[in-house]
Image (cartoon, rainbow, N blue to C red; front, side):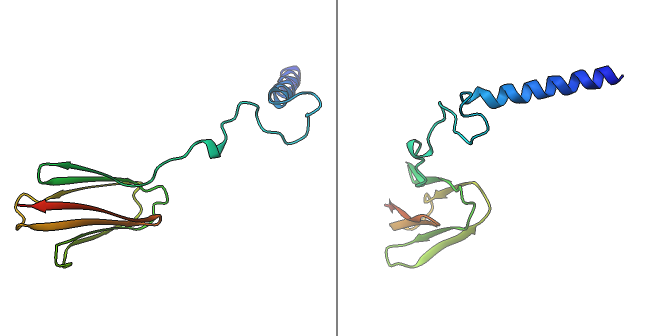
Length: 126
């Protein structure tokens, strides 16, 4: 039993050493280095603006809310009266469909407000 524990300890030490040397040379051993093929964060940029898709008299909105903060959804008519108001918090993906098929003839503005900015889309109902 003691020999099994001893052999496992030696194998674990060799495995840890191999992993430590895998990302660097022997000169770098013990120093903090980055992997040679690591993707740099500044090369990857994610667009966090909401996506609006119009189909007929409907607007579908999709927002990637990475901060999971509060997102305000509002709809105004042409006289700047608030028609719809909703606050969503804690969701990483915010999806909403706005149906204007039975709305009065007017120009409506859908406003989305999150941590990063304010975004608008308009719909004209005839």
